[in-house]
Length: 452
Image (cartoon, rainbow, N blue to C red; front, side):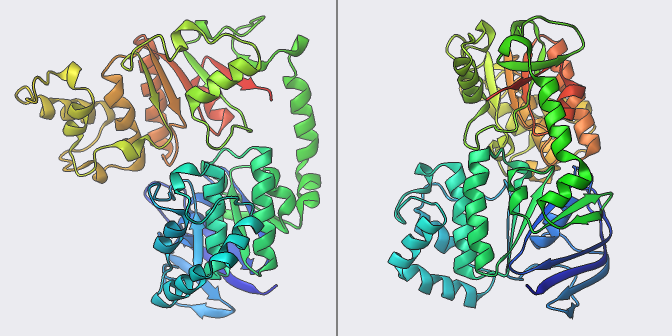
């Protein structure tokens, strides 16, 4: 395996992500590198640099042992995939592959030539575990298989480096087994695979090296899963945690709370946190709650019944709720269009100055500087707040909020937690899911940890 790219004392800063501080890291073709780091480790900014979306401010980059003089990796043959990468659902898988193309005209032409060999592409689909025809619309393909399509694209484009950020996904062990098979196929083709994750996952056993990041630097490199487990005590801690979390009498879930309870009764909770490391990738929060209740023979409480209440009384805020904001429109217009029955819209007319009033109320509440011509000018955390606030104007009985802290900085997370507590104090019952159990324990009255 040859070293394809090297970061030498590379530093970088971002308005919303933790900085990199003199990062030293080499990435080789044909190896699987698992990069593990918490939210403030610099891992997310490393992803942005690999994706060509961020610049370095100091340090040196080497490409195939030659000094690389540019400050950004944009245009290099690196395929970087995270939760924000979406297929066009109305197009077929083949059309999606064609539209994704490549960074250069030559790459796009190579891809077109490869896609003409339909039998070969279908064979590659099967090899990667993607059991769908090229003509199948993306809307009919589960999310895990949509992720597999990016592995197919990496092979077709012959990229030397494929980066998969797992932190925005909820991979089950079965998902990791399927994805791990695709990782091996890329490795055999001399494609370097970088897996970014907040913590070690089931893909750990596929890794040749594990880089542990903290404070914007790689603090330690482990050579293989066994060395990582031995030096971090992961296996011992995992066993100890499992013993502690085993509920008496074989209950369906474990609950962490400030007060003692004999059995979980979520009707008593104002903010219920839900954490499950094996959450299926393509399952929404309402579906997941219903499945867990059915699987463990527990009745879904009245206040969480999706059928009993109208859309205004039970509101589901998905992880990607930011994408449903009305792009190109102001804050006030977004609020008007969502909560028209509450803010005085009649027969298509808006009460005088209502739009401006709502915008000022939102900006005052969350300390946002006006004017804001369109929601695109807001930070990711502010967009998430707006995507929740606009439905909170309906005063719902229940709010189901999925991963509300995604892509938010520390200050935005604090504001979000304060706001969710305020909603609970005002009478709404909240169910909040995140990928980080520590976030839930800080925010929620109780944290529900279902067992499979």
